[in-house]
Image 1: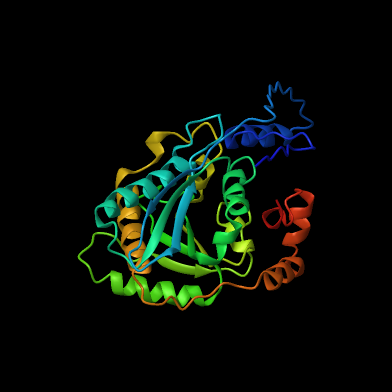
Image 2: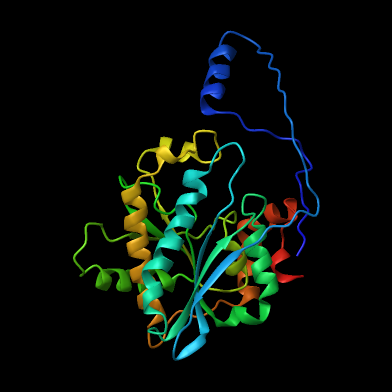
Length: 294
């Protein structure tokens, strides 16, 4: 699957410190700045998703799919975005591996490539597994999960809305275990973020949820996509707690007799995206309905 889109309008990002410095200078009058930028473009380059299955014993064709991206911007190691999320997926897989064949349905663990370049890995996955989409009962995205032990974990429901109450029920029941972590918050937003790996699945009607840490201090969010996104920003306990929560939730979901949350008709999703203006954004980015055509 080829994705060769690059930005048609030149753009660059600068650090918060540099931007604040420029703003201070502007208070005294006009400011001249020189930028030296060196970019490379590699058309036809190949990347790979990493996928592992824990087969179910009763309905192995039914999938609970969980994944986050393992690529990052080359200006840093991408520790928070998204090495932490990829580690949470791998740790949950390691914890559940010994229980292979114990659950009714299968769990598929994915580490997606090329998210920062336009959700290439997850979109490619969807396009290469169209016949399988109907069997994905739930997709959990782990972009920036486990980045901090200071803040609570959160499940941000993308759709459908009834998934929020269903997850809340599961988490409250799972929370009866002895634990050192707080039960994650459940949120639902009518306006969806279309720039992470849950998106291609959501557009195909799959129930989707984003599992991540929500920083209590906005400064924590500024490390992502900067040279400061290094290992010292990530807390080991945050990753451990997130992996424990994810493993418990996955085990419960994979062993449910029946999941009450169903797929959303694609035409209903497309209509909603037109109504709230997201379709216009995606057309500008040349990503409108890319998930629906090979």
